[in-house]
Image (cartoon, rainbow, N blue to C red; front, side, top):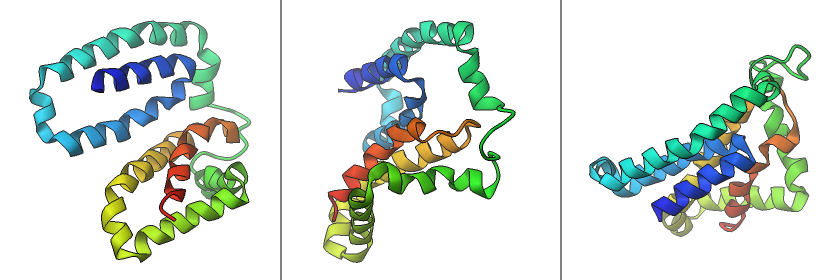
Length: 168
């Protein structure tokens, strides 16, 4: 399963490079489930080696032809909001209700409230919700650090919010 997961992530990077942030929550789950034993498994190193080999052409293509994308991440002279301002830090959070729609946004809020309000649901779902919350938070930080702000960029971090609706 790990070979398939990493292969899909590497292939996904060729379609939409910013999904790279998903690797951090996936690594968290891997270490949470298998502990430090994952570092003793030879397959871990084989997978890492294959992933690096798979990403080398993408790095070359990005450096050769993706200068505009790199500039969008690091330095936009006429950015809509300042990256480290309060409006810059809250920009994607304020876009979320309109991106999800009113019904889904209410469902997400209900799922979060359910997670914390009911003991039975909390103990059963906290492990499942942790990966979704981590996915959203890592994605939020990732996209907030990009100078160019457009609502369409963060679609990849919205998926776990739909899973939280299932807790309601």
